[in-house]
Amino acid sequence: DNIAYRLAFNSLRETYEPLRSSLQNVLADELQDVTTHVQLARAVDSADEEKAARVASRLLAKGTAAITEVLSALNE
Image (tube, rainbow, N blue to C red):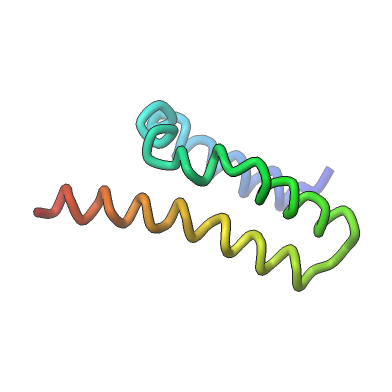
């Protein structure tokens, strides 16, 4: 019931929803990394903020690298 979270989530959804099918392919490594998603969920569940931050950073780095690669290719 966090209104700030809802507003942020809705903004992200509105931005990414039109690109969803394209992004699924680009972000496949991040989205399909079940092991790391489970590690993140466990860290959050146990309120281990430091571990959650490390795991989330590692997970998001996969997607960031993939998007950076696509954008670089488009610029060439």
